[in-house]
Each structure stands twice: as structure tokens, then as C-alpha cells.
Image (cartoon, rainbow, N blue to C red):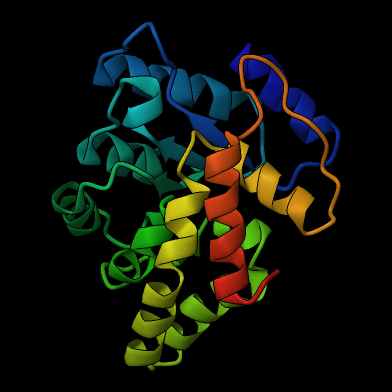
Length: 209
């Protein structure tokens, strides 16, 4: 299924792929390598791995990520959402410049950039794209103090954007902004009213509503 969907995405013009580790069937690290390589061999566009053990129950270890990025031409990096900075530091020590590292957690952008990250694949950016951009831009311009301040200023909103499982809150936020992104599909349900009020208050405080 992953091979079919990846090939179909390429056929329809995708610039790249984000591949999550298989869930439920908890693969070994060798199994993960074989899985990701099989997908990579079926396409020509660049691939980022997605390490999010909280969702999949499987951790892609630093050695596995480094090995895939070094030895599979179109596997170029990873979206890191493990929150394990010891593992991320180990990964970047092993990387030899071959791993493009992106944060998968909006509340950890700046510390991940400090370990060699190139940016963030973000939930926050759906409702605050300029501010999310500026966190990264300030860091890359050498103004780490401003980058850190922008990161910290966003924390209350980020907290509410994850008060329920993503993407429930961000869809609620976009609807509040008049973007009209529509309802959720089961098993996701609409945001609880009390949480939506907290989200709305955080959006007003952050200046986007």
C-alpha cells in the first residue's frame, strides 16, 4: 500500500514524500530499513522519514535513519517528532551531513535547529505561517535571542493546538479564522466546547483572531 500510494503521489506531481513508520505491526530496525527502501526504490522523488513513536508505537533509531540517508539516494532526511533530544544529537553525530533534519514538534523548533535542523514541518504554521517562518528565519540570521522569544511567545497557542489529538484543534482554529476547512471524519470528532474556548482565547492573545 505504501509503495502504491507513493508511486501515485509521484505520478500526480508530488515534489516529495513523508513516510511514517508502519504501525501496529511493530517492525524491527531491519524491517524498517527494508520497508523504507522498498518505497524509495519505487519512486524518484525525495523522501523524508517521519519518526513519531507516540503515534506508531515504533521508534526509528538514529543509526537506522543515518544508514538510510547515507545509502538510499532519495531518502534525504527526517521529520523528528520523538522529542528525544539525546537521540536527535546522536543522529546528527552520525549524519556526516547526509541527514536533512526537520522538527515535527512546534514547541521544540529552536532547540532542534541548534542541533543542525533545517526547519519545521508544522501544525502552528497552518494558522500562523508568518510567525512560524520568523522563528526559523531569525535563527538562521543569527538572532537566536529573537528566535527563542518568538518560540516562547507561541507556546500558549501551541499548547491549545494540541489540547486534543491533531488535527482536531487546528481544524477548529482554521474554521474560527473563517478558512472553512470543514468537519472531521470519524473516528475524529469535533473539539470539546470548553477546549475550543481556550483555543479561541489563545488565538486572540496571539493576535491571529
